[in-house]
Length: 327
Ligand code: UDP
Image 1: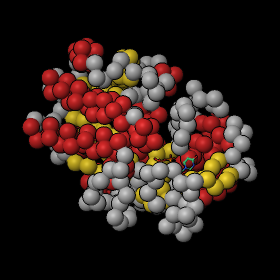
Image 2: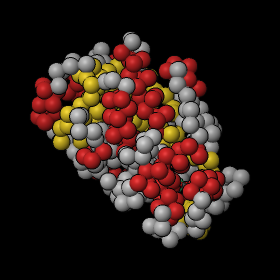
Image 3: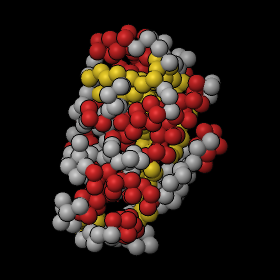
């Protein structure tokens, strides 16, 4: 039986492919390679290059892959600031892609899907930590597109016998254990890889966006989740659905928040480098604090984050040292 990984050549998708393959699943991958890297995929994996919005292409994939028991869906645009400038790009790709996938799954009678949602569906939360009961009020098109995907999945699960799990990631970072795949966005916008590019000497310094937030040191607080822990949650979610679990949503984080300055200091410790920094203006749309209450995933999926921030930065640093220019 096959797991079809959509967006399997991307940062998170490629780690899912590797871990699924390592624990014995048969894996096939779809990716349009707009942001993904074919080099991130093991040679043995069956790979289909194309866009999930292209129904004819997707029908061909589902015809060839006769034994799909579940879909993991990672393909989406995910940059908040770009989504503010080009909202239609986000709705077209993220929401449009989701419609196509759900239609094709129904056509081919594929029952289960696990997909990437995000803490960005919560917007500026009224309280912290954020549980599944916290109201979802996105403040940017990226978060809105993911909330629309969650809702579409939900309506489709009510109308058909398809079941889904939405996993709302907080801040994903890290890389594979042996450092042969990792984060390679172009341009890079995320805090940990930018800090590590400074440590490598590829940038002069890192700008911390704002130090006047309502937090103890004034910089934003985020909840970092290790890549391996994140993919473990996907595998547990898929097994949960296969065992007859009902459609549901889970927040995934470590339940521990770190300020941007704490992340910087942890990276200085791990790398042994000075990592020059400066304080800049706030980045629009950044909430003061985003920390997950992940207890529901603990109860229902028997999942919890095993790895802390230093481990995450060590893995990411290993990847950056081995691949200073990405793939
Ligand atoms: N950040 C920063 N400097 C950077 C990149 C990010 O200070 O060069 C901050 C950002 O404002 C936020 C935190 O780091 O407070 C995490 O941002 P990132 O883009 O890594 O993830 P996001 O929370 O947007 O998913």
